[in-house]
Length: 139
Image 1 (cartoon, rainbow, N blue to C red):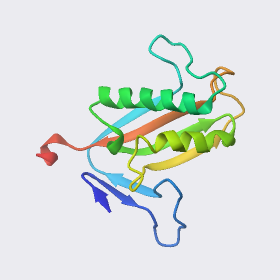
Image 2 (tube, rainbow, N blue to C red):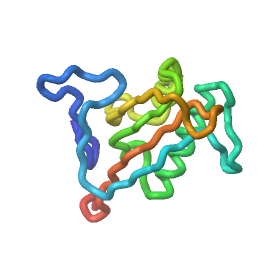
Image 3 (cartoon, one colour):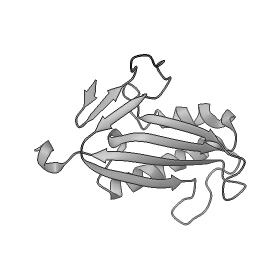
Image 4 (cartoon, rainbow, N blue to C red):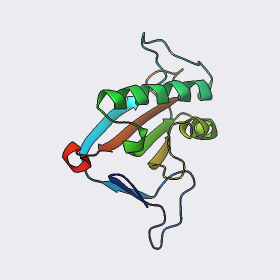
């Protein structure tokens, strides 16, 4: 299963398939690492205090903007790392994430519950790793 410059291996031999993520994603091209994004708008104000779905939506919009600044998009993402203050927020995060990624070929993903993020009202932080196709190889 491949899309452009990425190959998704959903079920490596001897490994149970993931739900909503791919076990292994490989690719060739230029590496793009996006720092953890939280639900701050362009003015630095928190969007969605106490609302994990609203925060997730702002986080994914911030990720989209960061990826675009590097000439990338969600189809180029090979891995998300999700930090949450409560794993109960994961269904809301996944619902929003699925509006941004190809659910047939989702990126690899890790989710970690943390005791706290850098501000108590911040519920979610997500970082992304992307691989952008080499322009010469794409032409």
